[in-house]
Length: 435
Image 1 (tube, rainbow, N blue to C red):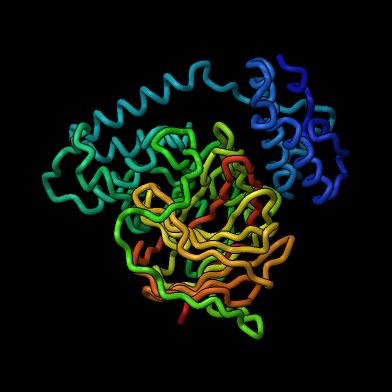
Image 2 (cartoon, rainbow, N blue to C red):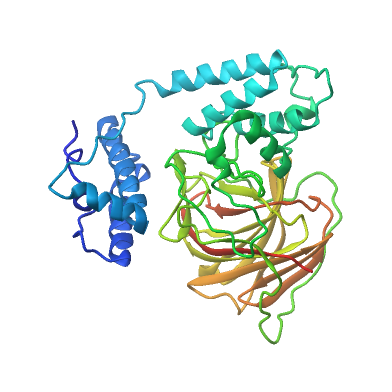
């Protein structure tokens, strides 16, 4: 048994039981800086295993103490010095179990048993949302269940050129139907219907991927087909022909406020956005913020989600960046085809990056006086093929772009360099209707 197993949440974070929310948040970040697995990547296996287990406990403690109702329940359990119940141990061989689930899902898909395949893939996603191409298979199977004919053709495992295996199709209605069939109702509770102007959030398990009802799916995927992110792509123009976007970069004399009906609002307190980590990267929500870290050479690390209001919208988020670049994915087709609007506060510059067929090219890059050294508010107005980009209310670019095509999917991204790591914190995410 590790030396920290008998510590309660307060002892683990090194705080008193009457600690304030800010003290809890500060203690959590201090502990994670010390025990995050990425911090001991060069240590021996025993030290890495210790840091991983302790980081899981620290994360669980913070999730409990940062939620007032959960903290109250936990404090009651501590009355009379009642020890906290032991946390369940992770499987001795999680890779074997994940591989077994993956093979079983393929067997269901090959036999045309789409409903069983979806249930198996969702179980695999709970264990490891980044296992091979399980996320791609899941959303494809959901769409197939919603659109298949009376006699569906089985998905051929050895034919990667089939559209059903190469295209990510995510639909909110498909998730609703699948939730009814699969009985996975706890996923539905993570994303309330988008009819309310400000959508509240609920807590999610530390290792899981939220599958929403009205708002689609949220998943974190590295930039390769395996669980390891790809190296940072060389920012050279793609060889595929593409019309150059028409853009202007003149600043707006007066900052423009974000207006319009709020269709989605996220403060990242117990949200359904995923939390996980891999070799040299991590993503997760906590303390009213969503953080993405990526070590040098790890590449672009991102999460995406589906807008409840369609492809036309105004999205905005507060971004704090240390080390590299970070910002919004304003259009997302799949892991190899998306458009990212990122800012580098250290250089007072912004960039519009197009990733096509897995290769990255820079469409726009410029410095701008509106960029602050600390937190910056990034906003993107999307109407048909028209894109307007703003930083702290100042318009920095306006362009018409057809590739990649407009999409309901959007996301958050952090970009490290070959020698530069990045830590990006996102707060106050909002999506607004244009009309």
